[in-house]
Image (cartoon, rainbow, N blue to C red; front, side, top):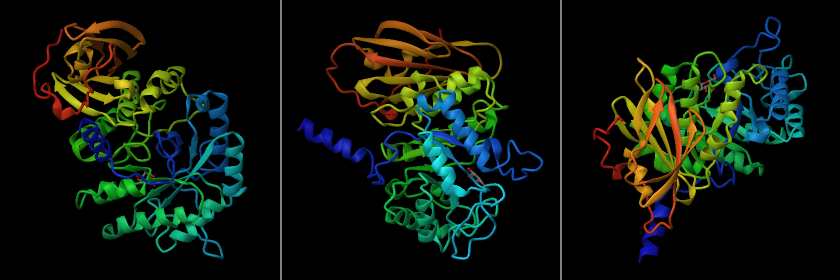
Length: 427
Ligand code: GLA
C-alpha cells in the first residue's frame, strides 16, 4: 500500500516533460542579452557588438578560464543577430557584416571547443527588437537551425496575438522534433500569457525545456528582488511543474556586471540554485572580477543547482525581514537559503535551526555552510540552537544532511510547515 501511494506521489508530482532527452538538469551557459543587448554598431564598438567574434571570444574564455569545467556548456546568441531580410528561399540569415562566416561556421567553432551553440527566434511576426521572426515559417526556421547544427533555441513571444501564443510554441516544438536533431527549447510562453490568464503549465512542460514566467532581469538588486517575489507568490502554481527535462526560468544571472554588490551576487547565485533555475550568465567573461568568477564557479552551489533529485525549492518562511528558501536534495538532504532583506544596519543572526526542514535533524544531521563562507558546522540535533550571520541583502546558504538511517521519508513541502507565519527566534 505504502509503495503504491509513494508511486502515485512520484508520478503526480511533475507532469510529463518534453521528450527530447535534454535539460535533465538545469541548463548552464552564457547568454548575451542582459550585458550586450542590441549593440549592432561594430564600427563604434567592435569589441562588444553582436557579431561572431563576441561568441567566439566567449567560447574561448569558457574553455580557458574554467567555465566549461565548472559545467557551463551553452554559448547563446540572443536578439539582433539577424539580417533584416530572409534569403531568396525564405530562410533566416545572419547579418552578413557582423557574421561573415554564417551561423554554421560559428556552431562548428563552438563545437570544436566542446561547447554548444544557442540561437534566438520569436514565435510572432518580428523579434522584440524588430528582426524577422517565425510566424508562418516554423518548419522552415526549425530546419534552418538544425541545418546549422544549433543546439538550443530561445524562442521569444513578441509581436504575436496572445490567443495564438500557445499554439505557436507547440507548433515550433513539433517542427524542432521533426528535424530529428535534439535542440533544447527555451520558451517565453507563460510570460506572454500571464497578463491574460493562468498559463497551462502541463502543456508548457510537455512542449519546452525551460520557460520564462516573468519580466526581463536587469543589472540591479531591485530587479532580482522582484523576480524572487514573483516566484514565491506563484510557487504553488509553478514549482510542481519543474523537474528533469523542464524548468522554470527566472532569467539570466547578472553576476559579474555593474549593478549588484557582492552580497547581492551571492544572493542571486544561491537563490537561482534553490530555484533549480537555468544558470545562464550574461556578463563579459573577458573582464570579470575574481570574486564574481569564484562565486559563479563555486562547486558546492553548482552541485545544489544540478542535484539529481531535480526538484525546485520553495520559500518556506518570512520572519523579521529574513526569507527562508528550502530545496529538497537527493539522499534526503536539504539546501537552505536565508536571505536578509533588511537593507539597513549590519549583519544579523538568524536561528537556522528554526527552519521547517530542520526536522530532518531528528535525531542528528550534519550541516555545511556554503555562503557567505564555506564552513563545516558539524553534527547537530533537533534541539541544537544554531544561528547564521547574514549581511544586508546577502544570503547564507547551507546544506543539511540527515545522519542516521531515515525511518520516515520526509516529503518536504512548504505547506507542511507550521513556521510559515510564526515568529522565529532570532538569536
Ligand atoms: C525580450 C526577452 C529578453 C530578450 C529580448 C530581446 O525582452 O524577454 O530576454 O530576449 O526580448 O529583444
